[in-house]
Amino acid sequence: LEGALNRIEMGVSTLPTHVTDPVARLRTIHAAMRQAKDTPLFTETVMDLAARMSTTSTSPLTRYAADLAVQWRVMDYMSTGTNLVISNVSMGTDRYEIADVEVTHVHPLSPLSNGQGVFVTTQGYRGHLDIGVTSCAQLMPDVQQVVDAMVACYERLCALG
Image 1 (cartoon, one colour):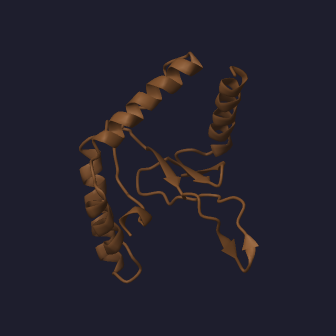
Image 2: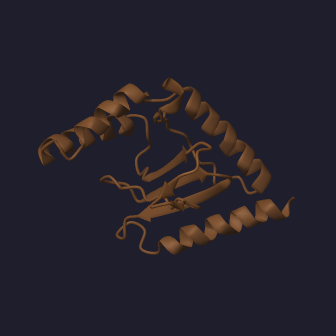
Image 3: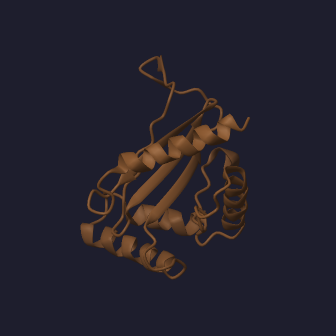
């Protein structure tokens, strides 16, 4: 049963957008993400507790206090002005159906917390990688710019072969 449960952890990493060579940037990001995954800030126990405290069965004040506690802890490790979250979720190899119709893609939509400008979620499902981008309209009025830049970088990497 343990292998069937999602493992939820949170780590903090830099995103080296200053590296101009696409392959070097991808390798640098991979190394930074590996380090973040090897040394998480929160393990599933802490995150599960925060999730339980943030359910609809609790009062708005309790949910706010839980969200604030997690934000304070995360902000201890982030630079001022950090407002981007990137999440990756693997759904495994199971095939899902809804009303006897096969699910072919999953379009992730992640909620923003106070102070977050952009939340990018990648979700793998049956050989596909679906990406959702959620943004705060005041901090990122044209999220399509972010999406276009992501697509352009992806296409550049694919063209390198």
